[in-house]
Structure formats: structure tokens, C-alpha cells
Length: 298
Image 1 (cartoon, rainbow, N blue to C red):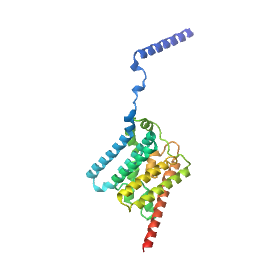
Image 2 (image 1 turned 180 degrees about the vertical axis):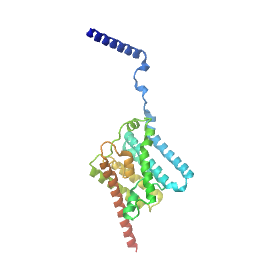
Image 3 (image 1 turned 30 degrees about the horizontal axis):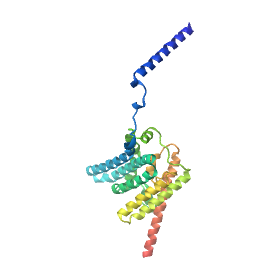
Image 4 (image 1 turned 90 degrees about the vertical axis):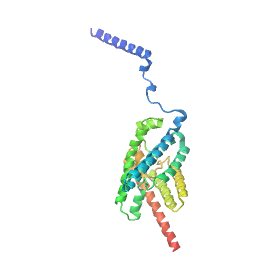
């Protein structure tokens, strides 16, 4: 009797399964289909998506600056400069990463050059990088946590923290395959070499970038902007296969902290200590050179 019951149960289940399959065949819209999931923008329009996002990003933050600086009192401007500059830098660089994944090194290089030129025009007093604060503290005996520096550091940290939320608001639409993967999957580290080597690379590219930037303060504005933009792009591309070429601790943490492939200790050593070391040495060399020039003139 038990066997008959079992046979009866299986026969009923098999019959139900066959009926279900027949029903699905007769009603195609009930069948699981990829068309029910969000499709990427394909073809030529799809190739323009990251550039469109990048352009809209710049326009959004430009308008935001105009509105907030007119509405809010002047004592908030330092905070706003740093907050918006940091948020714009980090989100733009994230989208530049999408451009690199889709269109390669040349498009990435051109994108960095153009974005850097734009940042030179709109960042104002915002630096979106803590290196100069540390330089002033160690080499100019300025207080590390004075009110001015505290506001800048707090704004930079907040901008880096908000970066992930801002990016998710864009990437959640899954306009490209890269947007979908970045939105749904855990990020991966940009560090592709051992920690010490990575720290040395970050120190070197930060040194070059900072040393040229310090000298460019005495150049014509347009010459300085174009030079710094091209140098930044060259250094970013040169360090792609090693540390990723951030030479900015805030930027590196906003985009890669807690990503797969590196510990927090490795991240701190490579992207914070490495960058600080390169920046401090560049500032020290610049000070020595300025003193030597002054003595020669005297």
C-alpha cells in the first residue's frame, strides 16, 4: 500500500510538472526570459554612455557650486570647495575607469587630460587631497589640526565617504555592463604588485606630480594647467599595471578601500604612506631649490 501511495504521489507530481511545462509553452510571456531583465544600451549609443555620464557629472557639480555659493554664507565656502571638489574628483575618476575598461588606454589618457583641465578651472580653493596639509605640518611647522585644516580634512573625508552612494545612484541603472558589475559586485584592488613595490610606485608618481605642480605655481596659468594635466595623465597611465596611479590618498580610499585583493594595512602603506612620502620629499626638494636660488641672488 505504501508503494502504491508513493507511485500515486509521483504520478501526480509528474502530471503537474507536464501540465506546467505545457502551460509555459502556450504562454511564452510566463517563461523566464532575459528580456525581463534590464538590457544594456548597445551599439553606438552605448559607447557614449560613460562620456555622457562624465559630462553630466561636471555640469551637475558646476551648477551645484553656482547655487550653493550664492545661497550659503561665505564662511561655508571653504568646506563646500573641498567637499564638491573631492566628490567630483572621485566620481569622475570612477567613470574614467569605465572608459578605460571599454575603450582602452588612449581614451583613458585623453579623458584624464580633459578632466584635469576642467578641474583646474572649477576647483577653486578645493584641493581634494590631504598631502599639502601634511607637508605644511612637517616642513612649515603649521598646526595639523587648526580650524582651516580641520575643515578641509573633514570635507575631503565626507566627500570620499559620499562617493560610493553617488556612484550607486548612477550605476544602479546598469546602462553598461561595467556599471552593472561595479554596482552588484565587490570592487577589486588596483594594486597588482607587492605592497612595498606599490608604495614605491605611489611615492614616485606623487613626487613627480607634486614637484612639477609646485614649480608651475610660478608659470603662466594656461601653461601650468596644460602641463599639470598632461603630466597627471602620463603618470596615471604609467602606474596602471602596478599601483593604479592614484597619488592621492583620499581618491585611492574613496575608490578602493576594502576592495578584494588587499588588506587595510596594505592600502594604508601603499596609498597613504607612499603618497605622503613622495609629496613631502618633493616639497622638501622644492624648498631647498628655492633657498639655493635666493642665496645665489643675494
